[in-house]
Image 1 (cartoon, rainbow, N blue to C red):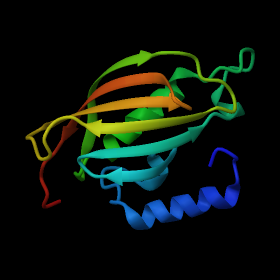
Image 2 (tube, rainbow, N blue to C red):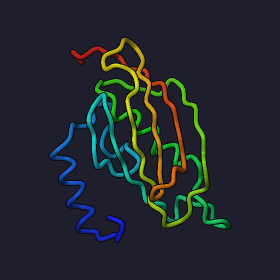
Image 3 (cartoon, rainbow, N blue to C red):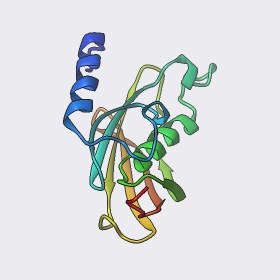
Length: 147
């Protein structure tokens, strides 16, 4: 994946689609980044490559809303519910992310599955082994499994 081999990327996406739970709260095209692991109400991982359209032209540093969007969409996607919406978020950008870097977001559901009304999701994003972003999200969930 680090070498940027397109065939490997497509194989990983296909394997992830077959091997892991399916996103219930978002359409696949609404998730920012490529989900490579998803275990509903437990954890998830996505990869987002920073391209020219994601950075400020003068500094080549990623705009924060792209990093937030990756983390936020993963936090919502990991929730096992038809309706999952961000209620609040506590964010910390640790360091700038530059053009060409791959941002790997890892989400962890920190409240028990099925807890009425809300779920706590922590998302940590890395470039290599260096943490670059931390977010704690409160996700509203409908808990109506009959939908």
